[in-house]
Image 1 (cartoon, rainbow, N blue to C red):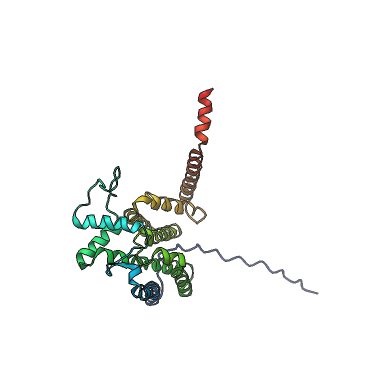
Image 2: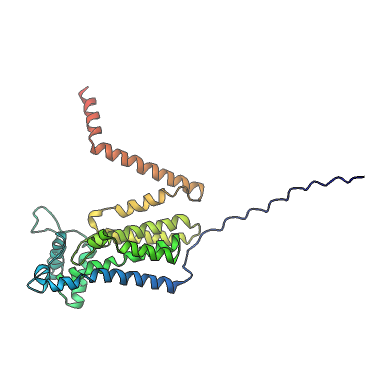
Length: 288
């Protein structure tokens, strides 16, 4: 008799393992990370300082009195005056040269840093203002290194760094003599976004290290660019709320959705108010 073929029973699926919680991501090659950071900084400084040859050969166009460099942006002279006032002890609340206006308080970091360098080195504040922007702008390489390792690896870091530091717009806004807050504004903002990105993606308690870092960067950014107001805090809330699709607890996801909805409605209300829609609407109601 023919034996019936036994039907193969479907194998039981292996139990799905719980997804491990993400924790702090530390590059496995810290020395390589440091070398890439130094390479980016040196490359950027080489690009900026290469202009010194042309500048020194044409001092009559870039210096007055053959010693004092001419700044490359109008705002530089405003910050230079405030730095001089701080060094001389004349940094008062009322701005005598601008009736009806006050000097920024607290003292912006760009002014404090320049004044400290002047007191330590004794160098002229004009020279400090001339060389300081590209020096501080080198910190942008940190952004490329952190994001590069987060999204890829050493190759991504290398490509992102060279592409970023060679941008003509970035080089112009952070060039020699461009004594303004532009050299650090994107550095603070992109670092804040990175910290909030890590805070949203890490499920362990270590995530709060990034939250504290973002809040501290926001504090420094507030001191660096006072006209920016609460832009850093706005970036923190917006970055966190738009991460509602990331795996998280139900309560946290509801919080993100609430913040995103509140932010969206606020933006719509501000746009309508600035366009005069509310004024016209309520004006017609009052006329009736």
